[in-house]
Image 1 (tube, rainbow, N blue to C red):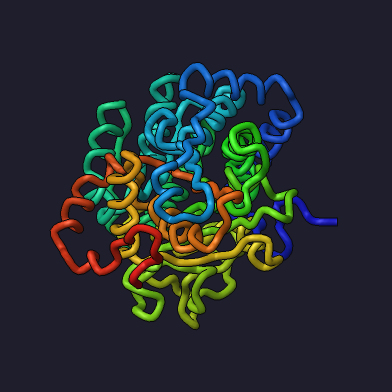
Image 2 (image 1 turned 90 degrees about the vertical axis):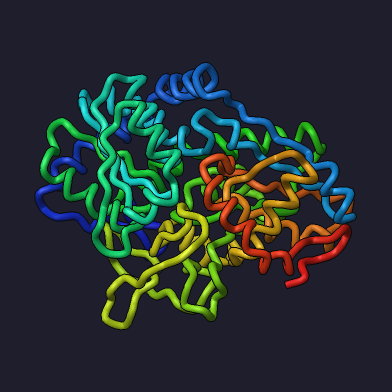
Length: 409
């Protein structure tokens, strides 16, 4: 029998003794909420009235015609409140915080979307809020920092380590240890110590539940493939859960290839040979680390994908062969982003654009009576300065996709 909090040999709760009672209480509260059908209905109703759910499943008719292969559908989490899938998890955890009677929330953020979503939830529920964000991400995601502060959150710039997501997580845990009685840590992805992977996956499963019903209604059958970008893995787990019990539906996670897998400047864990098993930040998974177990610096043009680890749930699914992992380079991402904007009038976030890359590579080799779904985890507004800077570098133009053709790469 599988031990709670483990997925195969991955996962667990490697926590300091000082947090033991806090996690015991959190596990009990979460178990009670899962067992209470009124809680899930309260969550669904909240997302319907506050966060624009269900989000649409859009047929990308122009791109489907251009590629001449599979019918391309896009799950539009960009139209969720605050502009990404992150609201699903934070509103669910907000309801849990109300049940636990706590008055303050803290969170880490990389791309800033989880920070904005947490600040929004805190404003709605009347909670004190502190967001930890790496200095490098604060620079890249200035619009999201502005909105977090205007929503009433305190944004703490983390200057240690690589000054990105993993360092923000470390600082959030330090804060939690100092204020356990009144504070809940709103973990943003399906990582960290149990019950966070299970909890975040449960709230994000609303994406897959909707997508399965929508594709069945619009296309008449299930898709052949489902694509999602993977940083920690919450948007991927969200949509994958709608199809995990259908072995004929292939699930593809796309990681950050950065400057290339042989460059040393990427954040691909399961799509590369650079990761190894380890324990950090409270759980066991595959990490980008050196032989001494020290976490390596990561890189991606997308601030939300440069995490050093990956969900233990996804690691188990990868090990089983249920989820295939690929990587997309920055240049490929820019090409896919431009094509999506010009052909469909949709502006995906840089993170989401990684999933578009792999789908565009594979769609021409599929049949017109097949469908694929791309989970568009967020919109590109937050990336405007990064995108503008990248467009000024013409080198990525080599990767432009032409009608009916594959990537020049």
